[in-house]
Length: 225
Image (cartoon, rainbow, N blue to C red; front, side, top):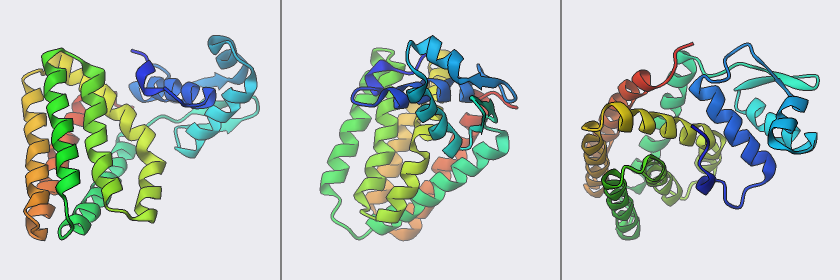
């Protein structure tokens, strides 16, 4: 599995390298304790060391590696790390949906329904990448719609890891639990219905249920270190 080329349009070479390394680290292809060499990565990608250093700095800021002279030590994502990531996602989405409860949601609801329709189409064509992308875009659209600068900054700090985890878990569901895909789609419709209820208690319960189920899927899909 490689990082989808369609997700890399318009990004820098450093970003592109970071995305591929991030995927390999989270998937467990590059394991905790392994050394990533600047020269080795530069040779693999056919580039100079400058974009490699840029990529390693991004991964270091995300806590996936520890920078060393001329390279890095892989830290990876432990089970505790993943629990914390989902805690942050839950807190962000709980907050933004509560913030949107009394807002005009027409444009957001239309946009999110279109994404859910595209998820259904992706199932029809067995398109893992498109399904994962629309799933991610659904959640990001809700965060962005809340129009909260600091929350958006927090989301931006984890979005690349979130997107990568979604890609890996979606691949696992497509390959092993295809019957679960309709359940995943239904969960998104329920979340949207909760938002449209304009009821804070309903929204909170729907978001809580969504993330409780998502954690179970996560533990089945990612390597445990």
